[in-house]
Length: 602
Image (cartoon, rainbow, N blue to C red):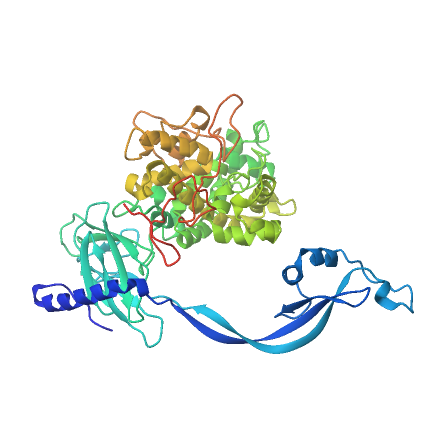
């Protein structure tokens, strides 16, 4: 491992030499070699003939490299559309005249002629060099990420090809150029603005090429505490696809937005112990469901403990209170696990479930709303749009593979509706044979589903903000407010949120919840108390109160109220999301990775 080189007056000779080397590298960039190699692969070639029954005449020759009959596409390729169509419609051959034999049969048949060993050249893409970023002198632990001393930023490059090596690492930190010989580069950090500074970095290889250009957003803020034992120091946060330390929350990386310095607000926290998520709220709806399922003895209540709408009355809640408290905390352990796996704050998810269902995952109040998060078929759409891996796994379970191949936006309206409905019902926990009518195993599964759905909503909000501002979300809004936009998007849909954000951007160059919340149309205004209830946000002089009657995602607004259409937010292929719509500018990914190309950065 080579040692890092820092620029000092004593290293001017090294700078001069490396500078000349950089110029040499740049002069041959147009001749950069491809990272490819060719290997010889043995295989067995099977030759088939397509023959006419009538006269045994050979119609075409088909070569395949697999066992079994040629596939339909292979017959089409080798024989053309006419013969392919005739072969597909050929009936089974039934011999009726023993003397004439199969010549009386109609159409075509396949006959294996030979199988021969063969070899072919296969071009293999070789892995490129990569650079990772970490800290030297500190290992910060989220959420505080506090270091007692100012650490250094360490860039470590790796060359995966044998007999090749990293020659130097190059880049910029807060606009200042740096250059380090070898595979390690140590950069001294410094106090930064609250929004952090941009670090751009890449590695050069002896192979004659270089790695992708990576970025990191680095924030270093003084804790403001004296250097007494166990206190003081620096809050250090890094957002990068190449970061080797403990990752920030997933949506922070999506938005390129730092969480609040130090400890996040309680509604955006995830406790280390699930007991810290425990609540003891008097949920009348949950009590009513438990009473209706016969889990609570309400024989002493004059009206059976229930109101006409299915909620518990005061007597019913009193009798059900111990079980209500037990039930609302039943899923906390798994909720913390999912939060740690996905980076979606555990307290946020618990607050959302409390608002949506009071932790009763069955269908009762509103038909076709499922699970703890009361998701609808339109509510699952962001997951299908923005989580490509999930879509590619789920779609073939419902639709034919060829229909799924064009992506969610490539499906026709009927197929989209079918796919959304099939996905929404996956979190339906109703179970007639289960205790209390609820499949608790399904509920545990659904927690991960809802976390992924919130992540997809983060992606969609990032795109909406970029479409409105032409800037990365974290540069025009805060981490907390971006979460508020995401909760609104989950509840009311992208049509409502997009209209509000676009309207707010017309009169301001920074997006705040206070401003955006005033821009929702009449039909979408239910999103405001919904968000404020979940985030425990109280604007001065406003009593949020209960939000029981706020429509869930994305319930049809009352008749006569206009709302923006709930269209999928479009994007193009430079953002790793759904399918391309060239008329809308792309939201660039917050951090480049080896699979993406160049993009604008603020």
